Image (cartoon, rainbow, N blue to C red; front, side, top):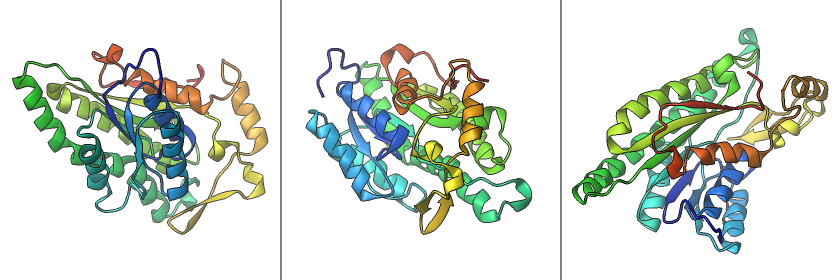
Length: 278
């Protein structure tokens, strides 16, 4: 992809959940800045579509289809980057969804599903990448080169401040912030910046759907209700100092800040991308 700055030229990025929504915009943004991107989605069609869009603009991308919660996925995801592009510089743990309920009605399945996709899957991906990162850093240090790598974990304001009806999601997103801070300390020696971005209200297919219309998505054969009551959405936007929900492009911009060289001395931080609403 042609860009006058190309701040990520020569970099290789993994972006989970990047066939649609915020993940797609993150992948497009990184590709526009010169990175080769491994696209992931549960479904093949949206993953291939994002790849095609990047390639049509002159960028480099490939698809790694599948659920981030599947056994062996993390290793396959990392291998796709290393074997195809010869390296790995950026990891964005973005894949996820919500499955809401008040605590007395929440099943073990709902609880376990949120921790699996939002916390266990990112942990597995980072663990799978650790061997390459350690070896690459050792080699670069011996050559006298400073190469910084980036991990951006996607959190939520629910994980920072809590949210009624989302005990499972909030716990998982709070957990990813804890993982972020731990990994920043553990991987600092390898020149890896580890940060997280906590999104507030971002307008995607999951939030813009009308909850009263019974919209749902299919996750491994399970129909998960999505959407927000229009009146609740209107009320939520009224409380945002900027007066509106964010766009996926704006969400991608917040992630991008942690991927560029200007953030080489920023690590272990949680950035709230919420239009000014705490």
